[in-house]
Length: 204
Image (tube, rainbow, N blue to C red; front, side, top):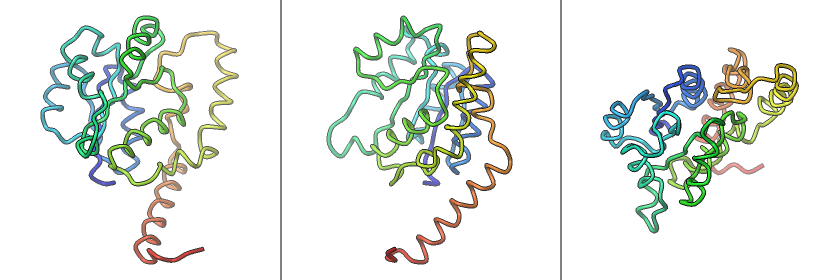
């Protein structure tokens, strides 16, 4: 899992910081690009298992979108395992135009703002398709640690302020893990890896 590379194409600083924090906590190589030129330079390195791209950043008529669309199209056979996966991020403001096209071309996407759990679930599924990871992310399975508590808070906040959320996650706090939460998750991951190496065949 330490070799998983994730490229985030996102020009919103808060959203990119959120994704860098959340995915970087997995120990992956996570880097960002805020423009098409930066994105092409990063893509040329060929070190990515997954690309997250904000439609508002890249546009639907750009050369970068065409490139990412080609990368995102399904590939059959053994080549599919090594093929980079692409997940498009669709803000509310562009959803009416972007969603029909993405669905017509069977391209994977999530709508912004997205819940913490739903984003990780999609990331987990895409990386498992390439065998970049061998099992679903622990954070996806342990919903109670973040998503349940915070998505309920989002529902209350959204009705209170009545404003449109243009951020990455459903609520600002959704992507702001406390130091205690990050430390606890990393401790669990470390213990799980140690147990797996020490007793790979132990049952029960």
